[in-house]
Length: 280
Length: 302
Image (cartoon, rainbow over all chains, first blue to last red; front, side):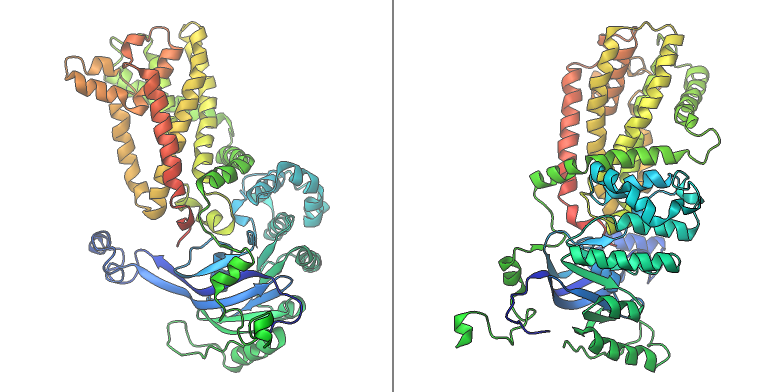
């Protein structure tokens, strides 16, 4: 971790010893059988494993401190716990152990879940905006910008059609435009940059940079090392839920590229290797 | 020396520092912690536009693929009432001794459906919207309340149909129709409260959703939806009759019948019926809200 310089650095997110565990019903021993279910009810506290509840330890003992003005990339192979960690920072997933302290309310960039395919694009703009906590006036003010940004109306009046009639690219563009319409203190972006065609990608990258300026701290999850290099000055590398490296973008990416490029594919998740935890 | 003067030694990087103390120094709060009750009420109020927009959106998207579209908002409750009329009115002849049986039955079915579907959708309010819960930040009580509101909007469509039925069966328009408004307000408060209770239970144990239809059907049959409890329980233990008549569903159904149908007299109502109606609404509304809030930070656990 970088040392304190003469300017005081204000922390915006502090994670200390964070563990996140998912519990999945009806798997493992005696999958879904009646006796397993009965077991589960009767002996819930005693042995979750015997009762067919499987625990997935998605994030293990992760600690870091993020400061105002930083843009932090999160990298790691699929299933390494990046998105889970972001959700926990946003307060959307409860942590098993440890604590996460945040400045204000961090928000994930994304409104997909709030939108309804059977409604028109126009109503979805309002619904999504309200779901993110904007007021009706704010949405009305930005409505034109959102629609223009999405480019939905470039090929005709599509905003008044139900969203289920949109192509997947159009729907993705509208979703991004709605999500990016709000200003955030701590902003977390989960691979949102990869939507739409080339021209839309360029526009959305520009919009992300704008958001970065107004946001205190930005987290970016991506598998695209180039976009991490372009936007982030610090990188957290998660592997199997553990924080493997934390440091300046170049240092971490070099190690990461050696890790992913070296062997064809890292060992499957269940296999027990012991990665060295090196917190720079 | 320097460490005495100002900052701790540079080797003490943030993680090694006590995170709680560091957080306290900069005024950071625990992420995802449960807000205080007044704060929670304030947050919920701030999201009132989202609650109404979400309810309306759910309602309109419900039938948007059907050819007849929104006509189904009125058709569905009417068809329901027709089925009950055929079975209970015609085949089982419960309409004996009940004046204005069709308005009596239809009012019962509509008012009961409001409570029933609020509870049914409430059970899945959190469990069925985990995507939303895990993606966005808002007081989770917005979901069950919004679903109850959606059912209220649905009921208003039904009430429009009900008025047509009342008029066509010769029930006179009267000032007592205005009593329907306070009844709806009380019933909505009750429904939203129960929806929050079952939403919390359903979030922890999704199996509740499988069990709920049976509970609700039992509740429907003991609440006199398609027959008059008064007639059915003639000569039975008066305490049993009183208990059934005082259950919240029966209270709201009978209050609505009393408000709308002139031949439904106050003598068919249990004693202190308005106090009961207000009491049930307050107990369920406030109790349900607090019960739901107590688990606010746990919703969304996978």
